[in-house]
Length: 510
Image (cartoon, rainbow, N blue to C red; front, side, top):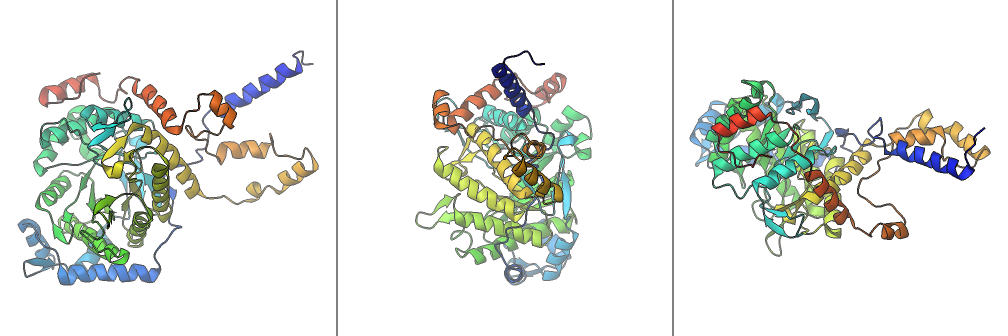
């Protein structure tokens, strides 16, 4: 017989249940790599018309400002020179598409954190080159620093719904391009073991930076496990190549660095204002990047990153949030997947400066649209503010919860005899009259529901008693706690010392 008073027994039972709920679920209800593709803003005929227009642009108009080496390589594969431009025939484009991988692995420095990309799998990650940071003490914008980049890197390292990390801000305190590139990779290496991406300003930066990477992990380690992806824009809209970026791409290929070739045209400025015309030109330009890779290294792992960007035609300013950019990036993902290419699109490029209603609305619409459309790699999905000019630590935590909800939406609804639960319904109706505490309910609680870490679900009175904090304030407290933790230890002290002796590393030791 239980000798405890009834009220104590109930409190003990509630405590046990609360402790059980605090334990992480055995089954992640919001797995990354969930399958998208249910949202298709384009019909089959739309895809064909846009694709054929893109082929016509490449075949008839061709590409301008083609570097000499690339020009010779393209011509040797069947391209034609005409009026200073290089016309790329349909057969060459189709050969490039046919040889491109339909999926490949983005490696993590820790192989257990690698991700398989392609098909209709959706992975949310980061991007951007913000020059300002929303300060966690002043709540105002200031120039981004190398320390900020490192802090962003180690902050996101513990966020489950960020599948890979692209440097989200530019260390404006670096004195030149070389110092920026080498210190950026050092900060990434020190702060995370997820797959990462960065940019190389010049081709001659690639080899020495990879030498630095091998100093940390052993000679030849990067070639065996290429965990850095390069972001490159070899095509400049409208319809021309850029010499420096082409050189970087070719140097990355020589050193086995996976690449994301990004086309970032802007509607009404560097591409048509009509959405269909925009998609046709942007597709042609990204196909031109694919052809460039193909004539040097057929089948090379390239993310087909066709990023439509929108201009507010009233002012000419970049517009990161809204319905147009959401549907354009969803359509871009659909087109890339329709061609069987590993797709990269952008989302969450809110124009909001603060973490307010505009921020949440614009991020939620665009991220969900990109995920539902099946974008394989969805960039910019965490942390970005102010039309990509800013990055926020608090935003990383809030966006991590948002992405979990999107992964949960993509997962969908599993229908089986067990989940239909006929017997459970009968038992509840004829028994206690509710489903609380039933085995099926407890199982679903652990398996099917996501419980956000920041969103407040308390009654108003409880929320008020706890201080009445909004989401931004709660995230701010959490960020400060996370950044107060020590260095994660991903770089051995001996390797850190050796690298600092060989390179001018400006990140302070911790």
